[in-house]
Length: 216
Image (tube, rainbow, N blue to C red; front, side):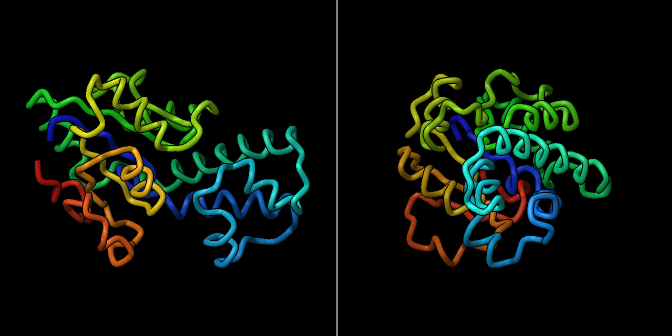
């Protein structure tokens, strides 16, 4: 590893259930019913908050409502995270990997689709500033067209070309963006059990279940 870009949600922090709980609360407020498993996979996963809220609002575009409920969803998400004290921690091996990379002088940062209040929440609660400059973290500030662009910004922040970097991702969308960005070394943290769907992706050099398995 010469340099590393970590995804966060589902990679460094296993939190999918908290997102589902938060979206259920928003769904109840907007339409008095929970989301279904089918909706979660076909209408919500991988889509921006505003588009999910528009869907839950019957397809009606309402920017003010979408802004309000996007922030509210993330407030609920953070509440659910803190309430689950047993699981409110980085994935196994993450801190040790951060320590090793730091000791070896390997630069690394995070590129996440999370919004800034969530990133600030993660930095504070997981003490990420022990290992990286929070200003180097790339997050959804509304200016990135997609995660390919986010990877480009993360590489710029690390001062390295994308083709020399390792990306650690957990999702189909993240892997697709990594490939399109020109990443040659992708490590799949298979929290979503997608290994069988990406067997033909030549850039995936390792599949792991936690950070203790990552080959340096």
